[in-house]
Length: 185
Image (cartoon, rainbow, N blue to C red):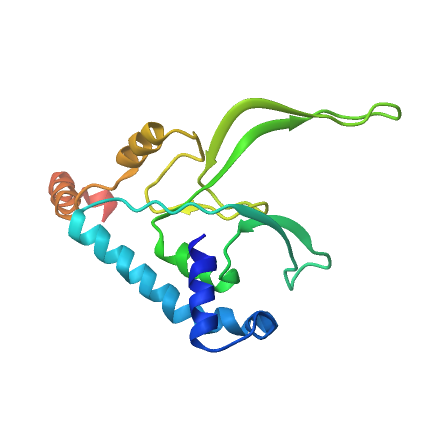
């Protein structure tokens, strides 16, 4: 919803019609400085209050056409009114890009019966990139988590690297315990 408000502000400020704004993604490029201001404002909020900022976006299915492949395929992408430009900006800024979905399975169909989708009722967080969606994390999260903030926070805390000074002290101590024998020289 932020995207539609931001894009409308940029459209009005530049005295553009909707058609001109949408033409060739021109309006989205004009909106990029405003998206960057939003990122900086969120950065200041994190620093000033020591809080975690969580952004949520719906997903949409888009066709990906990689240049090295003969055929395109469909994948989920963040649905943002700022187009791929805004989505890329936020995905680069975020410490974690997570893809959440309902867990389901598809049964095999045969000549007479159609395949059926069966939902388990579970909701899952995916933390790694696949051909089907974007995801990734700088927190060392496991590949999948239940969609539950407590489970996410616990996994994030476990995956955090130690303080660099602590790691360096441990490495120095380990190096000091090493003794080189004549055979290893």
